[in-house]
Every structure is written in structure tokens, then in C-alpha cells.
Length: 349
Image 1 (cartoon, rainbow, N blue to C red):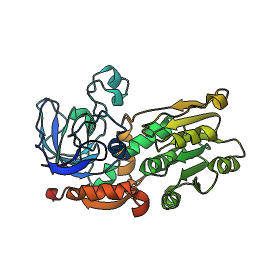
Image 2 (cartoon, rainbow, N blue to C red):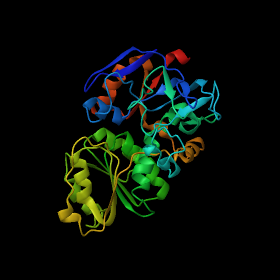
Image 3 (cartoon, one colour):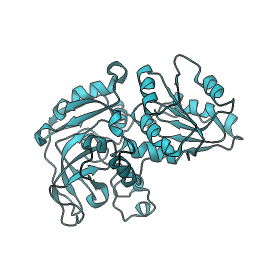
């Protein structure tokens, strides 16, 4: 089969790899139909995730059709259309029983990280009964791809961890796909202000279509001063970091109101200064989280009932074999006005 293979920081290739097979009774083999590229994949290519080794097939999102199941798989069979969760869950360990699937002692975020991932024609999914979801009839499969990772990540790590409440003022720092996923799902809780901060005018303009109330280009104006102006000099109730660099996290520290929440989502490859000299007395809460995907069933219902439309996040389509071109487009988001890309395995047609 063909797959996108990582060969160290800055190096990747579309090449031939052995088709995966069943190695555990709880496995399923899925033929990929549609997949995508995540900002985390770009962090891997930058060298920010050193656990990813030379030869690893990247990717942790997608939908497909089950090709084969292990003898212990009971909820799925050959031919089922499935959503692949970015998090693999054994369902039995201490962390899984707490709903912290991201810290599963045998799974967690392993696809495209510690085991081969979904940017390939086929993928092996461990713990299939707990790590796959049936796709309902008459649901847009491209919308469902957004439920592999970015929708539950934005909702769990940003909205839920940030404890957004009706009437809250919210700043989302980073208007990429994850920031937009936060923007979409934050509106479940009717905040009074949703301020989007980024350096890309196109992305900021797009956020207004998704429900943002205000936008700030932090390269062109003083984001801190503008946010304090918009919030009657209080700062925001919730600041969500959706980039993963020191400057954006420190911006969140600068704009948070007393009693507020800073929810980190970004994948950080460098240390960040924690400014306790200004925040020690402000009663703020800082949270970090890797998505657990515990909300995926609920989010799948909201997509099925068309309460939210994640296809609005998709700007580009490519055949799977053109994944190198797709990476270039995704990496140059400002140049190509890119949000999310969809890669389709043409051999599935």
C-alpha cells in the first residue's frame, strides 16, 4: 500500500509500505476513504514531538470501511463505515475508567505517533470496539472527518476546560482549524463576546462567518489594549490558547480577568514563561489537556442533526496520492487561504 512516511524533522515521503494486518484480537483493519492533515502533524515535522521515529506513517484522523476484524471485536464487522478516533482506548485501564482515554495505558494518542497512522490506504486500529464509531446513514462523511480530532479537541480542551458559561467573554487566540472548532462549539453556551485573535486577515474574516463577534490582528494592533477596551477594562472570562507558541500563551496570561480560566490547547515545543508575578493573586485557573474524545458521540449527534456544520472548515480537496501537495497547501495556509484539507482515497471509488 501507499502511505505518507515521516523520516525525521522536515522530511516526509509518499512511499510503498506493507499493508497492516491483525496483530491483536481486538484490532480492526480499516481501508481509508477520507483523511486529513492536523496541525499536530506539522508540529511532528518541526521536530516538536521527538517520540515519533523515522519510518512512522503519519495521521490520526479519518473515515473508512472495515476490511477485517480480530476475533474479539464484537461491535463492528467487515463492510461497516466507521469514524476513526484520534485516541485509542482499551476501555479497561484505570485512566479509561476515569474517562481519560488520552492516558490509556495501552493506547491514548498512538496513531501516527507511536504506531502507524491514517495517512495511508489502510490502517490498523487497536481496541476497535472502543476506538471506532459507526457512521450514521445520510451524514456527510467529510463532516465526520472533523470529529476524529478537531471538534472534540476544541470542545473538550477549550470549551469544557475553559468552563464557558452563558454571558461569558471569551478570547480564542489562534484562528486555525482548532480555534475555529472552539468557536463553533463555544456557541453551545451562548457567550456574550467571542474575540478571535490571529495574524492572518483571511482567517479572521472567516471567523465572522462562524460566529465571532470581534476580530483582532495582533500584528497590526495592540491585542491586549483592544481586548481590555472591549471588556470594560476587565479582561476576558475565558482565554483559549490554540496555537502552541510562547507568545500566544503569554498573551492569554495578559488578557485574563480575575477569576478567569486559561485553557491551553496548543502543542508546545518550547518552554513558556508563567507570569506568577502578575497572576498569583488573580484567582485564575490554567488547564492543559490532551483530547479524550469522550464527547465524540454527543458531537456526532449534533452533526447528524445539523446543529453544527463542520464542513465549513474544509477549504481544499486532494486525492490521497497528492498528499505532498496537500501538506504544502496546509503548511502555507496564509498563501493558499487554507483551513482544513480533505484527502480522498481514489481506489475506494
